Image 1: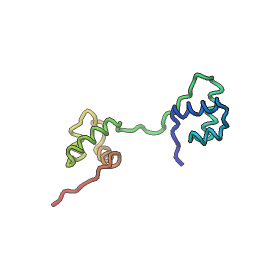
Image 2: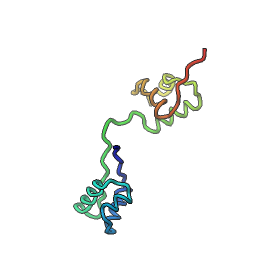
Image 3: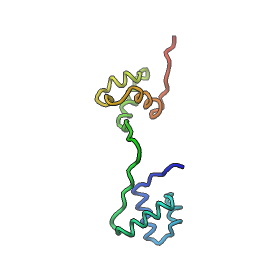
Image 4: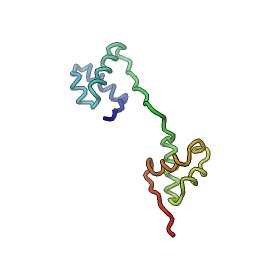
Length: 122
């Protein structure tokens, strides 16, 4: 069971529905936020007042090595020249990819961007 990320819009919708005297189960069904999360948000709203929206929790785990901007740069280069290897992509972008291993660049090409590996024809 995966954990759904609660956005600020979800939090605002939960609090607005709570102010309109909806039941917690109905709020959960309408917004798609789990019942226990709705209960915690309502409790936090009751304790801290009207103006304060509780901030969503930071994501747990190791941060990603590639930001969407880095992936976009790699994608543009690979689309313009599909014969580029991961090593060449890394060598062409030393400022962006100096702290990243060659294997991570290769995995980002295959997994995040959906490019396939090709073997040279002999």
